[in-house]
Length: 77
Image (cartoon, rainbow, N blue to C red):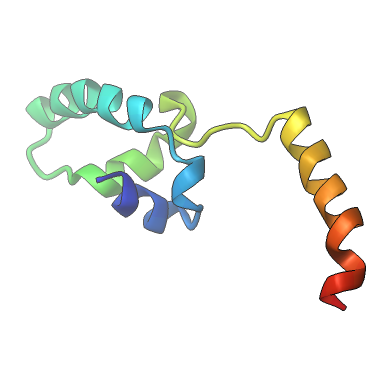
């Protein structure tokens, strides 16, 4: 299910919060009780901000990525 959410959001699977995807199931079931036409993945994409499905990019991750580019840029070109 997390992989389907990642594909729908066009994000790497590492950026999807497994805990929040499964926590959002409770809210989806409640919404589905009111509207039986709802589908899980489109509903998740629509409510991704309020459910916190995508992990934030932290400052330390940006620094690590920048450092990695500095170290490996000459090798890759």
